[in-house]
Amino acid sequence: MRSTNNRGHQKRNGRLKLIGLILLFVFVLSGATFYAISLAQENNEEADQTEQPAGDDNQQADETEPDPSELDGTDQTDAEDDDEEEPEEEQFTDIRVSAVGDVMGHTSQLEAAYNAETGEYDFTSVFEDVQPIISESDLAIANLETTLAGSDRPFIGYPLFNTPDAIIDALDYAGFDTIITTNNHSLDTGLEGVRRTVEVIEEKGLDLAGTFTEEPDSRVLYKDVEGIKIAILAYTEHLNGLDASYPQDDVLSMINVISEERILADIEEAESEDVDLMIAYMHWGGEYERYPNDFQQNYAELLTREGVDIILGSHPHVIQQATYLEVDGNESIVAYSLGNFVSNQRRETLGEEREPTEDGVIFHADVQKNEQTGETTVQHVEYTPTWVYRNRYEGDSTYTYRILPVERILETDEFTDADRQRMQRSLDETTIRLELTD
Image (tube, rainbow, N blue to C red; front, side):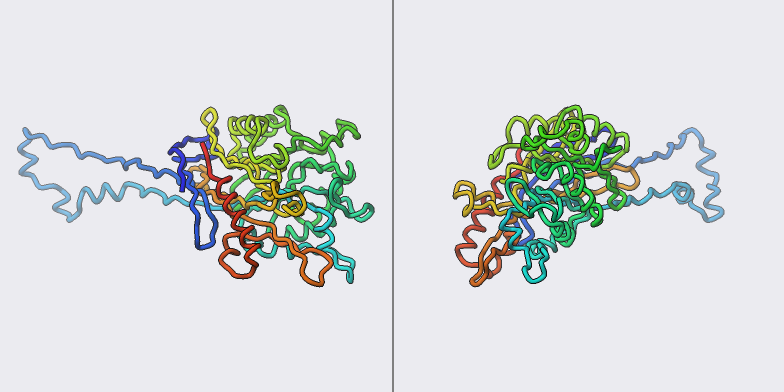
């Protein structure tokens, strides 16, 4: 168990208040996950007290004349209390925001989802174990690190990803309602792939952030979640050099690429919309690097300084640290990399030193809005550690993939000792990585 210093402040424009932030990571053996808690400081303002004026000792007549209230049976103090309005009871709206890292579409994953009898793809079984967790959220975000260019192109994984549309059906089934589409693989199937990816996600009724079919009126995704207005900003650090093959104006119109100018303009717009909460999803950092680099840290500080409240990262394919930041009076929670949510990256394909590519987390933030004051507070932050299970059962020609919530699964006897050892390794490393630091 670890706690950070007790700090707090009011965010500018009164949007988000992280009051007396205490962050504790607790390992819960009941299977709920280890988590970090952000407790709001109680309001200790005492109620105003009114003093009754003292009587004049020289006015002897007042001592002998009866109080009018004594004659009519009323009490003066009670009458005064009746005139005072009782304070309005505070009402709060509570929501849960959840987010995950990279949803990949490697070739072996596509083969596993393909049904030769029907000629269709179905990825839903991959998400069955985490669906109850995701679906409990009021806002659930996933990073789609592939494109949906359609069957006119081959469905394939690395290096130029093109995944069947059925992956969106599976994410919808799992409980996700918002998809991040800006990342280093956004241009894998060209500008037409960017356009079709946007169109498919929208046609299936999900929201997306980070890419567009053309120059948008706004690059920020706004969502009203139970009356709490949220701005979601999403950017990628690079595009694998594929942007050099297309007109830069088109690329920058259709894909949010990290730049200070772009970010500042989007934040200014979000502030003008009086949002209650700002979330930035950043595709950044070095692949397989277990620690954030200077680029990540510098932009995390910029985002915090400008008022972003929750900063989530992807791209390294491994979990990086979670950090509590305070910059120029503004506060944020930063999870530099959430790791892989599902992929074929693992010890068997990349080597033992890259075994952490099997690990991921579901990030949860419990947010509360005071309906009387309009003040919004991050009350609680927690993480559900996950591990990607892959196995080829006897008689099968393809692998089976499952995203497992590690703590709950370790309480069962469903898996072999070898699998359980790998899960325990994953859980131990995740616990260390996500220990919040100042």
